[in-house]
Image (cartoon, rainbow, N blue to C red; front, side, top):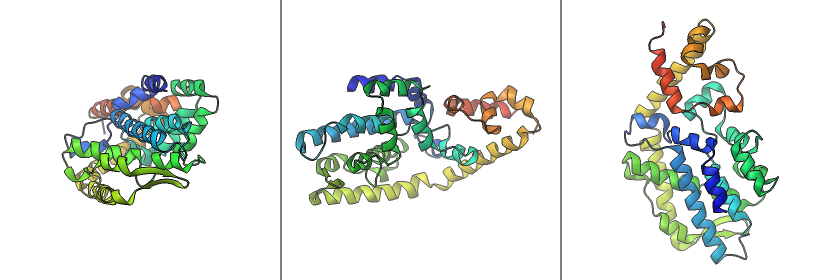
Length: 281
């Protein structure tokens, strides 16, 4: 099991996440927030590993141990489809990181897909269905995406730590102690309700104080306007853009393939922005 996880981490599609900031434009406001989606995905995997281990040990009659590997793989790969400056980019070029995640998992041209197929031919589709919330086992789906899931638990603590905004802190140890599987999904023991409430509040605070910070939002608008302008200028200045930002051409021309999407990261985009400074516009 862990051999597969190790191999997945070493694929070029997963390694690309090292070059994509978890917080996008928010890192311009909170200068400590330079961490990557790579470290967040590893963190989400680790929380999933701890939970599935606990479920196997304590609730073997309710938790199907065959679902543990699927849960850990889905946790590891849940953000593999995020692009450079993800949310800004998505609005502009009509891409969707969840769809891209599923494409990377199911496309025969990726290293990730080749590894997943070694588990079983249908395993890539299983992982994708967890990401799309269509997998029949609610326990697995809710661990990956729900009000309290491994994704949110990791990014709240991680973002809080790196930005220095303490609002995101909550008692993860306690939550992992009171989480349990039920016939209808995932539940929490009443004795741990204060830790759950603390988590909900910390999530609210992080959105208000960090993710929706006015300076971060304005940086996003600047970035959006910059890309919009480039998109507009492209029709008249194709030669300039072909020279300064070749990997963006498929996006300007609406002919995006998976390989084009995977060739972009924050570093590539920042290099392009720098080269546009010398442009005539």
